[in-house]
Length: 467
Image 1: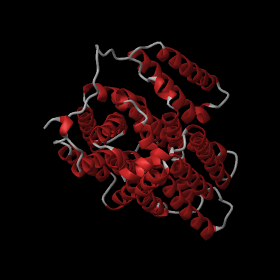
Image 2: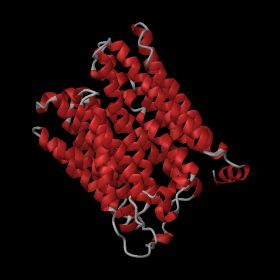
Image 3: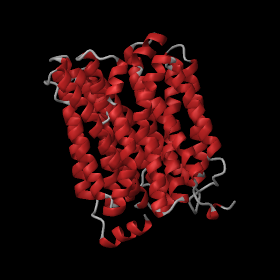
Image 4: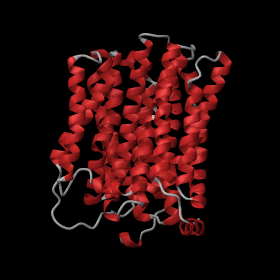
C-alpha cells in the first residue's frame, strides 16, 4: 500500500490512543502509589520522588530530538521504538527490588514518551485531513489529557486490589496492543534534502540547563535558598538558557528551530500548553492536603478526582465541535478560564469539612471541563500552524512544553507546599500551593488572548462545511 493512498482508520486511531495511554499509566499512576512503592521496595522518599520526576524530565529533554528524528527516519518507526522502550521500562519496574531498576525503568519510560508523543501527532496529520484530523486529534487528546484522569483512578484501584506492579503489566499489554493495531499504517517521512547533521552541542547545553533548573526547583529548599550551591544552580540555569538560545540561532540544523515561534498561533498554543500542564501541580497539592490535612485515604482522594476524569473525557469532543463553529481561540480561552476557577476552589482550605470536600469535588469537575475544552483546539492550532516538513519537530516542541510544564509544575507546587508547611500550618501551605497554580492558569489565559488570533469568517465557514 502506497503512503499517498492511505487514509487514516479507526484502527490506527485506537492503536495510537493505546500507545499514548501507556505513558499516563506509568506517569500519572506513580503519583498515587508512593506509599505502596515505598513500603514494597524500602526506598527513601527522596529517591522515590526523584524517580517519579525522571519520566517527565527525560521526556521533556528528548521529545524535540525524537520529533525531529521522526520527520527524518520515519514517524511509524519512532513510534515503534517508543513502544518497545515502554515495554522494557515497564518490565524494569515489574522486576524492581530496589531503587536501581526503578530509576532505570523511569528513565526508559521518559525516553519512550519522548518518541511516542510527537511521532503519533505527526502520523495523525499525515493521514487525516480537515474535520477528520480534528476528530483524530480529539481521540489523541482523550488518550493524553483523558489518560491522566483514567490512569490516576485506575492506578489507585489496581494498586489497592492487585498490587502496584500490575499497573506496569497492563502498560506492557497496552504497548503490545498498540504495536499490533498500527502495523498496517504505512511509513511517513518528511521530504528532506542534504545530509542530516545532528545538533549534539545544542542537546548537551539543553540537558545541562534543564537538569540545573530541575535540581534548583526540587532541591533548593533542602540546600537552602541562599546557599552557595543553590545560587550556583540559579546562575547555571539563567546562563544555560541564554547560551542555548544564542547557540541555536547560529545552527543550520538546530535542535529547536526558533523560526517556528514567529508563528503567533503556534507560540500561543505552545506557551498556554506549558502553563496549563504546570497546573498539574494542583493534583499533588490537593491529594497530599486532603490526606494529611483532612484524613482521607489514598483511595478516597482518588474518588474526589473522578469528576475530573468524566469531565475531561466528556468535553474533548465538545471542544472540537466548538472550535469548528467559532475557531480555536474561544474554546482555548473558555477552557483556561474554567480551569482557573476550578483550581481556585480547591484553595479554599478555611472551609469546614463537608463544604471543603464539595468544593474540591466541584473544582476537579471544572478542572476537567476546562482542560477537555482546551485540548483539541490547542493541539490542532499547533499542528495546523506547523510546516509539513517540520510537523514532528513542531509537535515535539509542543509536547516538550507539556512534559516540562508537568514536571516543573509538580516540582514548583511540591516545593512551595513543603516550604510554607515548614513555617506555617498545612492548611495555609495548601492554599499557597494552589494559588501558585492559579497564577499558572491566569498567565496561560493571557498568552491565548494576546497571541492566538480570532478565526476569520472564511475559516469559520470552512470549518462548518468540513464538520
